Length: 92
Image (cartoon, rainbow, N blue to C red; front, side, top):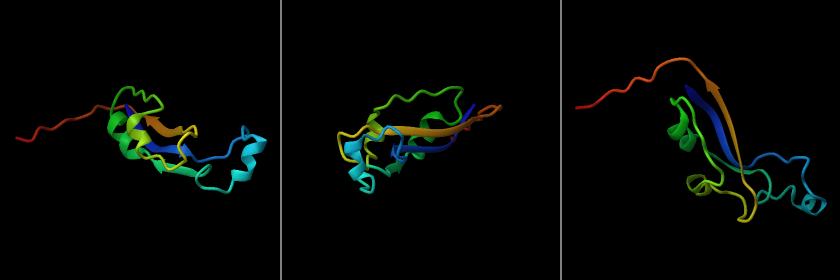
């Protein structure tokens, strides 16, 4: 089953794909290094399941947006697949 360790939505890292006209904004947190913790959303959807698929853009993740609108956002997820069974309990 899937266990989500970390999930981040935004623009956490500056990549090699930064264009020359974007370099002036490297220190502006509205453009780069703007991200939110997406673990609660991904944990609810994915942890404990046999498989998980999240398509970006995603309405729930967009609510956590910290970057300027119009910028491409990225979802970074760290997870493990473990053997086991999920046990459900019923409260009466």
